[in-house]
Image (cartoon, rainbow, N blue to C red; front, side, top):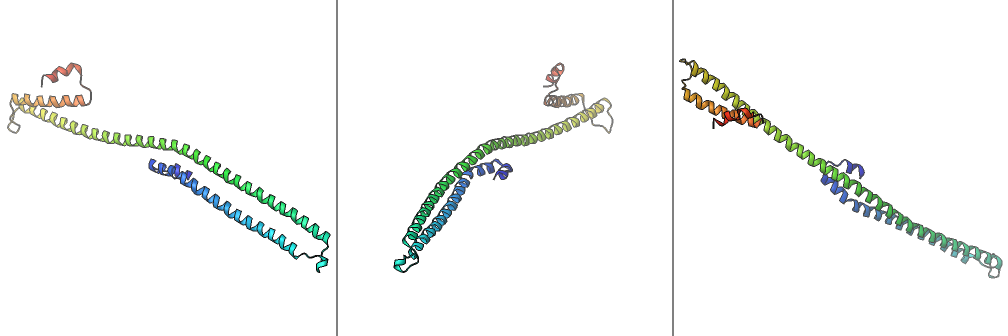
Length: 222
């Protein structure tokens, strides 16, 4: 699951993966228990057949006195050998059972340790990913705000340029009146220039370039 966790695109997936670690641990341990139980049953069945075959062998052995092919000494020898073999079988079975119990315990400890390490690793990874997502959202919002400010600034600049162009035309019409120019009085020119100065003040304040020594000039047009 490591590569999937590292490659997760969103924090939600990391959280989902981390929460599934314990279920993966339980599934892993269940599979181990099933495998060990299956082997234990196989071992018990095999050793049981071996014990039964030893008993069947003794049953088939008959003394000379009973019409068989073995003397009492031979029968005693076989019984001792088979008794030793039974003890070895019992010892081997007990040793295997102890090893299997230890194996199951070791697997559980190893799997638990790996899960714990993974949880720690992916907890920090999740924190880093969440931080990066916050930064990404912040940058996206900042980009939107910058675009909005640029658009507002452009509109303001276009409006001011248009007003300045009109002011120039009005000044020319007032200073050099002709039949094809706008009829304009000095009072009207003064009123329009006050509006242009207000727009220029707004633009200067917006750009944070309003000079102190010209502030009074703008104040006079209020």
